Length: 608
Picture 1 (cartoon, rainbow, N blue to C red):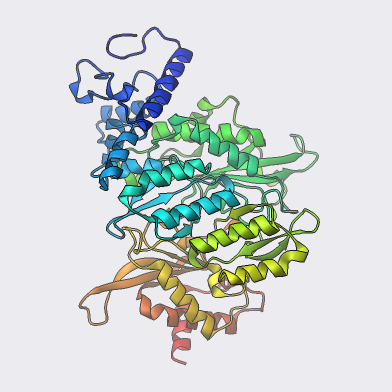
Picture 2: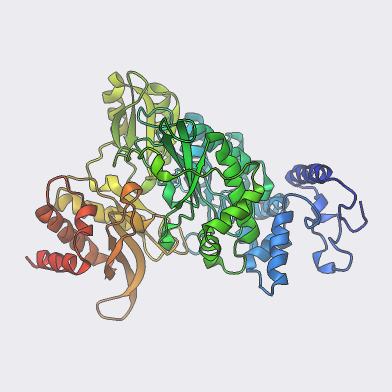
């Protein structure tokens, strides 16, 4: 090897071997508090002392494509954003020794290290909370009772004694003090929960159908694909340090929607009937560019994949995003904007260079129409395809679980089910594999925990992000206000059709407000006396997903929260009184009326 650390004279296979060896050695040495090779190899280039102490990934290795992309930006006169510079200046996965020292001293990271800690799933959420939130990984939302108990223990011993269920079928532990970061990380790993790359510019928790393998109506069990994608991500370091975060979902066509169309890559199972140009069977259509916070759903690419082609296809898309995603403007650093800039055909042509096969195209109209998901199938008691078995969808208002409740759910899963729990993108969970005869006992056990599985109340359809009690970006207390809203509406009227109300605290739209029947985006509004800014919301109506896909329209531009329960009560009473039939959904009702008409009817009802 040349003295400057380059890899001249080595084959590609040898370069990859050396890179993997050094990376593995660095992980082991870092965990023992020893200096890493990355810190001792000297300058990456003898003429550039500014890179002293960094490993020369420009020469070879899993991060070479990231370096090339950054170099190309600078060569074209662009300026890397601070996050890109942070990733370039320091290896996020070589920080274990620093993190250990910070934990021993009880101090938080500073500067761009706050960003780099997110590679370990650790978010310093000041000023909302002077503590860490730890985001986990459960591919397809699956966890076993042992893991649930360990998460509960860690949240009790080192966190705020509760967990949050997220809209990526995932869990978060909150209120972790700076002394206990490594206690949490090693505790998770000992329980078989590997949350590497669960934050920062990486691929978030891979979602799949919540009823995969137990749904009589599904086209295919997505668990193997979610698991394969998860482990591919964990074991391919080149998939870290993307231009921005990235979401992938697999929907197997079952009863519960995975909301795959809200993801950067959406894999949706379809059936191809007999008599077509390809063999009949189950395939996946690939959609790209979903990001509903930016008012866009994933669009069908015309590509039809066999199940074993899905992960290679995702990797090809990811590598193209790595090479060509925006590394200068964080607001434009998502896949959607590459697609907007290039168009689908150019993007797919570039992605095909990373594929071991040509993109297989097949007309959407020659596939059988997809069965529509059942609203609220994630709640209540439902038969499985296994004879005599059911799953129970448990209501978790705004996705919060106390640790004793999580442990109680693990006990129920062990005693009455198969020892498994399934998280959903609707901020709740399923207990599968219950004998039908045991349902009354399970319902009683849930009641003892302060939980239930009834799909009929307003709170059953609530989705809320963390809010300003735990997120520095949020403009309001979304979870607390969601519960106040639910209590008001449940005591004032009886809505007899499924209704989703989504509350999100900022433009990041973690609660996906644009696709709710009623969506609420937090904002600061003037108080009645004009003396201060108080918590409020912009209110949207008529959003949807699947066959009813659509972005909600703004009904109320800005309202103080105190006014919202009364306004929504009036709006829902108008719906109940003026709908075409008892079966008409609120979504359909709101869509067939203009915003002006909805406002007029609501105002009239308010003053009735």
